[in-house]
Length: 202
Image (cartoon, rainbow, N blue to C red; front, side, top):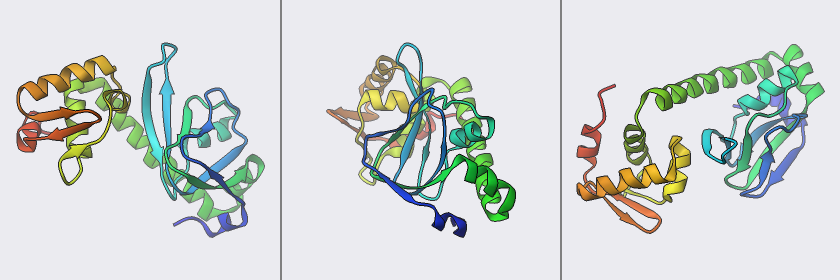
């Protein structure tokens, strides 16, 4: 539930596949997503990308919040995955509301703490889990009701923090074992139970 005080601020619309914030950009507004999804990802000097998180309806961006509080530049990239509608709160109002509105303050810091916990889990997964484990979890979590996943190898590599060549090699190995079937732009999970059994018990 969004704080009622946000209703006084204007909405902005962003088409799909548009840059919302660029790395190094100075943050001047707090954006609260009311419809759609924004992907936030990091990019290395070599061009490698890693998805950090997604901002969905009713959420704010934890990195933007941190930048507004510390007056730092945005350290990642944010792109709209769908058409997006968002409430726009200027920096001065953001800081004033944190001090004056208990509801807004709880909304901001609840979202901040939850996202930070998710980021820590992701960091732990990338640091400790092998690529094949991350890939298996991704396949099992994202396959649809037909046990199909429509994504390129490059897209999956970005999602799990690996390289396309590594992902392709692991996928081909799974296909040779008869666990999945690879098609152009589509992966079909053939033996879900056996893929699950390959993951360590949590």
